[in-house]
Length: 290
Length: 309
Image 1 (cartoon, each protein chain N blue to C red):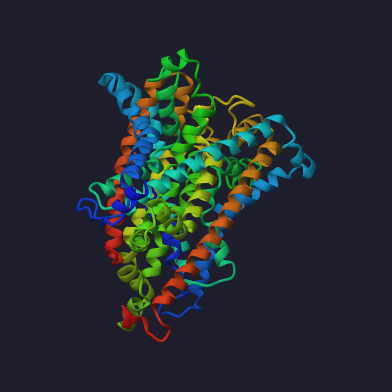
Image 2 (image 1 turned 30 degrees about the vertical axis):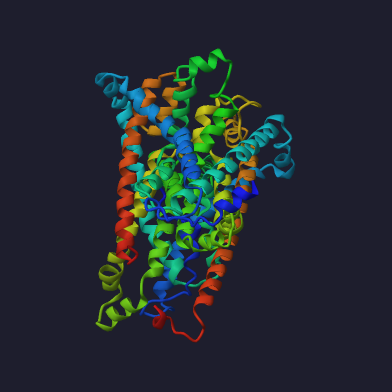
């Protein structure tokens, strides 16, 4: 045993061309990674595609694009888009304020921006409903103005704004930190006003990141369920989002219907994921980290 | 999906002092922008948080604590802890193995594999639940076989664990991959040259180097595992004292108009979230000072930055 060990010890580690590394452990770790990824993610996800493949085209269109389902897509994408837009504006403002200005409580606020990531969605959902329902803190006040928020698309949008905010702020913060103040100073020396500097110097620099943050918030918004179901009221054709419709179909044992909607949502999510990856590449090139 | 948003690697790299633009810092515009930002946060972040506790204590502290003196509540707390205790370590082990395989070697399809790991973030939680119903439900692929062998996965604890594993899948891996990539393999090569075994190298060199990002990923993974609602709701079947986790318990109480108990349970989850954020900020601070320290070693204080770069 010891002889064997000494006999093999002097063997110099060869640099494998394929992996470019002499570190041991590639095969077991990669094997485990692929196996675990397949078991937990890939094989289960493939059921959606295989289940839909077993449907005829007419069945698929009937289940995935009926009037009620189309209304749900419209609502889901509409509210998610609106919420992502609001987040793009206020997320940019917030990221700018957090990076460029120093004021008391800045660190606390910077930490709290991640609250929507950490707070369970159901908790956010009931809290927002409590605030915006008729006798809530905001709801009673808005009711006097004739605005109904809870159980309307506005309520859904507010829930999605809450959920999406950190995506925009956290995507923009590092980019704003990278911006060289000298660039703005140069523009100011050349006589540019604040608005011109923003439009011509700053905006082009963080535009890719802003678009990435927008896409991330939008992608999260279309799949969101927990924070929305409480505030939406869940009325078919009016405040029923697509993820809720999947749950409703499942509760009625309509597996075909649920799977068809899931497939449409998955395909859209995959395209968004692809778009986000391309955007991030563009964004990192823009700030000089290719 | 979430790209590099908010990873420790990205967050710790900053640590810049506040720089202000050419138009000075004490302008009215500055106060206006800070004001709008704070008003927005107050409305969309702090008000929801405050309302959880306000609603929970609406009928006083007695009613608040009574909400937890309920077998269904205690069972929900236990189940939530069990699910987190199973899924977080599994995804942490996967995160370590996956980041080692991806960050320490060169191979074809690396970025594709990284994208696949991020995939669960792009999938709606509801679909994450649906896929396990399609696999293990009564009419699913393995449904008849599981039924024959009297094994229950969906509408039982194993289904909840699987759905939780899916939604928390990327958390640890995506924290570790960028850090391991940035650190390179030099220290590991040195350890191997000095005669350490592969396992020793990992345990004594790599692991201490990634302990903060690992911890960071684990607490985020844990927060999501304890708070997941959509995916778990689909696979759980909502059987009281059997398959109800805390978020599902909140939903049931809320739908029964038992608001004080619903918000009391919600407040416990909110405290977990706040504790997570506090830990997260602490780790970011530690990682940032560690980074400053490392950079300080490389740059003697009398060397101006622009001469070295």
